[in-house]
Length: 118
Image (cartoon, rainbow, N blue to C red; front, side, top):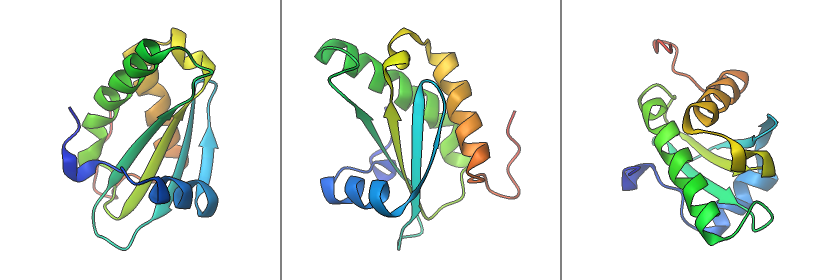
């Protein structure tokens, strides 16, 4: 489970990140990010009903949480991230989603300067 201190939960926060932040995409995921006032990293996940039923959506969110957990320590603090799953995420495995997340975080240049990402 993703620790509570890393979670983005309020609807207003999701909306603010989507509207005021910047976004990068892959076939399976969209990453939107925005600076926050706190010196902590917060991450939220969004999976539309178009992706699948409740069971499928929860499975994808579980895979995404597990995939982003190793990155929480190497992402620079002070960011709000929203990870949005596209329909192709339904057929993706955890490692594939992790690779997409790594690519998106690199594109957005969110890694700490001193972080070593494999």
